[in-house]
Image 1 (cartoon, protein in one colour):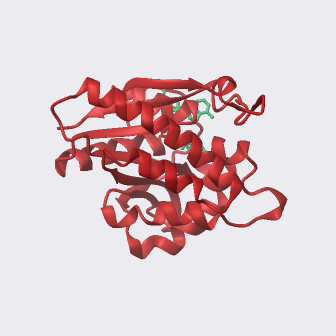
Image 2: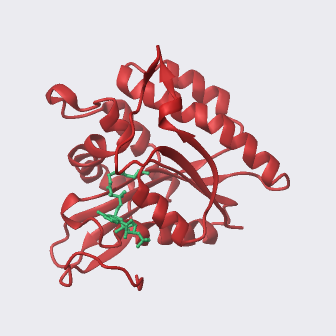
Length: 233
Ligand SMILES: CC(C)(COP(=O)(O)OP(=O)(O)OC[C@H]1O[C@@H](n2cnc3c(N)ncnc32)[C@H](O)[C@@H]1OP(=O)(O)O)[C@@H](O)C(=O)NCCC(=O)NCCS
């Protein structure tokens, strides 16, 4: 990271970026429960962890299922070995959009079902756009499924580094595209920094059920979910 921005005083923070593998599953789940499942915008908006809930097995399973793809990374404090941030990336294969919509409807957890309904609805439109934008490639994508940083070390450039390393890894593995459906203005900034193209967005206020906005926007979500894409190969 060599960006000329004002960041909190974290001069002692030294971290390494390492692969996040199936062996790291238990630490990943613990990290997700403490951060991502509570504070990622869609999760927070539907109150995924409300009422004292400590987990969301179906979402945890979806993220754990991505680990064997070998595209996920962790940022680890080099002094203490503490997990500081994760990026769970899946290999998204085009052509499964309708199947994913059907799967979303079968989820047992109503809050997570609402989230997957929204994301698969977006995927249908994004996939159509990608087919038109890049008619001659296979559309396999490194898809960011969950980016999360420990609240104590946010705004130190960790997600930006994790995105950069994911991009390099996808390129080395010969994957055509990288894609992130961003629900935070900070992850959007990180994608913009690396020249990702915003190819789709949807204003939260326009996505309603029974006349009610499903994911009311906040200062940190911004007013829209935006999909960023970069051609890697
Ligand atoms: C989104 C999230 C992963 C960002 O992680 P992070 O390591 O703090 O982000 P970075 O430090 O790499 O910052 C990324 C950009 O956002 C800016 N940013 C981050 N936190 C900020 C803050 N509190 N105030 C102002 N700007 C901030 C950075 O300056 C940087 O912008 P720049 O490229 O213009 O310099 C983290 O806030 C988080 O875990 N949020 C909850 C889960 C979530 O929303 N995940 C994303 C789903 S898409």
